[in-house]
Length: 469
Image (cartoon, rainbow, N blue to C red; front, side, top):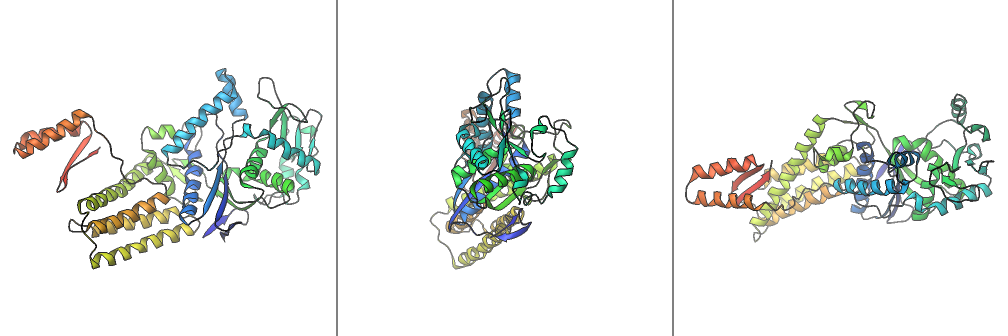
C-alpha cells in the first residue's frame, strides 16, 4: 500500500509503527455553525482511508477532534447572548447528525479541546522549561520558531521568505515577541470570553497546541498518519510538528495526508459569492450518500468542482449500483435452494478479478475514482451474467462482493426496507385484486394514482415491486 506523504512530496510504502495497528489523527471542524461541504470532504476521504485500513486487517485507532473554543464560537455566542459552550455543544450534535447522514463512522475518540486544557498547560510548560517557549508581561506565551531548526519541513517554506513576509504585517501585540515568526501557545482572556487559570494568566490556548495535545493523549507521542485539508498544511500542521517534536523529542507523524480544495461551479466557495452550501442544505435536495459518492469519484488530492450537474450525475451513477444490488438480492432470495453450477463457479472466480482491481486502486494512494470504476465493472458483469435461470448461490456471491466493496467506500447499496402508509398498501392490494379479476382499466388507474403519489410499481415473476420516484 502506497500513500502520498506531504512531508516528502512523494508516494511511500505504508509501514506502520506497530505491526497490524494504525494510529491516525484527523483535524476536525471548529463548531460554530453547521458544517459545510468543504468540511465534508476530509471527513469522507479519511473515513474511507480508515475503512480500507480496517478492510486490510489493521486495527485503527482513529482520533478526530472538535475545536470547541475559538474566536468564531465566541463571536456567535455573543451575537446570540448565550455561553460559548452552549453554541459548541449544539453544533457538535448537528455535526454528528450530518456525519451519520454521510455514513462517516464515529471516530475511536472525538476529543473536545475544552476538556483537554490541563494537558495543554503541561505541554506549554514543558516547552518553556526546554527553552522553546517564553511568556511575556501580559501572560501571553509564544513559541520560539527559529529555535526549531526543521521549521518549514512540511510546508517546504523557507524561514527567510517567511520573515520578509511578516515584515509587511503589523499584528497587535507583536512588539512583545522576540521574533515576528513566533506563534501563540496561550493568550490572556478578554472580557466575556471563556478562560481557564494557568501559571501565566487566566486565558485560553492557541489553536495549534490543542491538536498536539489531543494527538499525544489518545495516540501517543508518535503516530502513523496525520491528516486534514490542504489549507491546514501551513501554519496549523507546521506548528503542530514544531510543538510536538520539541516537547517529545520524537518525530511527530510518519505520514502526512492532505485533501485538495473543493470549488463551487469552478469558483472558490465563499459566503460573499453566495455559493456557500452546508451539508444540511445539500441533504434537502439529495440523499447524503450521493454527496459521498460525488466526493469519492475524484482522487482526494485533486481539486474537486461541485455543481448541480455533477451531483445529478452522481445520483444516477449511485442508483445504478443500488439497482444492481437490489436485483441480485431479489434473485438470491427467489432461488434460495438452487446451488452453483460449474459455469457459475468459473464466473465467480472471474468476478474476483474486480476485487483485485479495486484493491490495486486503493493500494495506490487511495484512488477511489479507479476503485469506483472497478465497482461499476462488477455491476456490469452482474447485470450481464445473472438471469432468471441463475442460482441463488451465484446471485448471493455477486451480491456479497458488491456490498463488501461498497462498504469499504462507505456507500450503502442495500436498500432499507421501507414501510408504506396503510392507504398506499391498500391501493397496491386493490390493484392486485383488480389484475386477478382482469379489471385492467382499474389496475392501470391505481398505478397512475400511485405514481402521482411518488410510488412506481413494477410487476415481476416474484410479485409486485415498488420504489419511490
